[in-house]
Length: 90
Image (cartoon, rainbow, N blue to C red; front, side, top):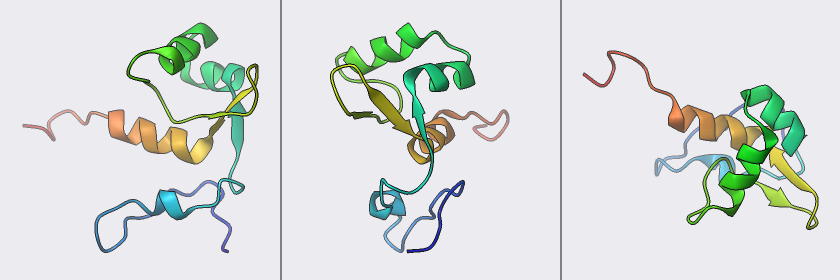
């Protein structure tokens, strides 16, 4: 499998993101604290998003009841979906 570190997979011929086909063992992983620092939000915000109904925020993997990790590929895809380009929606 090619190295995908730092890259966002492209869409396939059906328009689906090929992210679902990416191994979760590739790329970088962030803890709740690391991601909160990157996003400039308190770690309690990420915890609240994870426990909201419906669940909000980027996809996550709960390794144990005390350890939750975020794939940088998932986080980047989530942020791209939230991105607003002024003038583009007009």
